[in-house]
Amino acid sequence: MIFGLKWFGIGILLTIAESVLMPAIDLAGIRPDLLMLALVLISGETSFSRTLLVAFLLGVTRDMFSLSAPGMSAFALTLTAFLLLKAEEYVLAETWTGQCAIAFAGTLIYGIMIILLKPLLHYELGSPVALVATVLGSSLYTAALAPCVYIVVRRPQALPYLRLKLKHITEHETIPEIKT
Image (cartoon, rainbow, N blue to C red; front, top):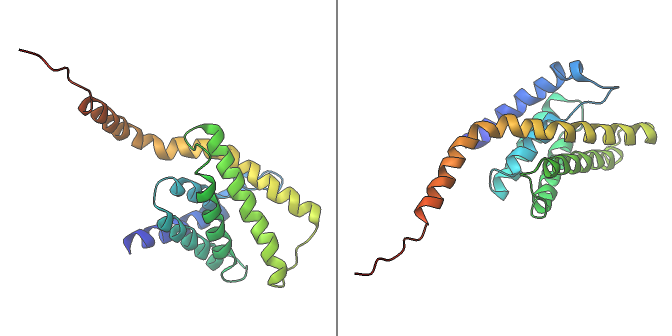
């Protein structure tokens, strides 16, 4: 319960940050997707079901603050999280190229899902060239920011991880038997 409320609150803060802070780093109408970055980060940290819960909660917060159809972002982010979790079995997220690839693929899948859902919900799509440019641009922008976000978020956790790794190595060393 607390886990869900925490991520619902984080989703609200990220949605507000997207609308307030992101115009400052807007490049030709293209912005990075903060909710996707949060989803990519959490997908490597928690279990399968919790990641899907976080994706749904982040999507619901985006639906609450946007003018899109209720449930459209929640469905798209949840399906994106499912596909990302399946893809992370084959991609190493510890390298910067893996982080960029996961963020790019996640944002691209999310953009394609929104493009597929809009006509079903009777929304105007707009120019196909503009759609492709926006989805690809947003995916590239989000992928470019992914390694920086990984460094900022995971850096404070590095020292406890190294201590745990050192403890594991020292506890599992073989001690030669002394014959008397």
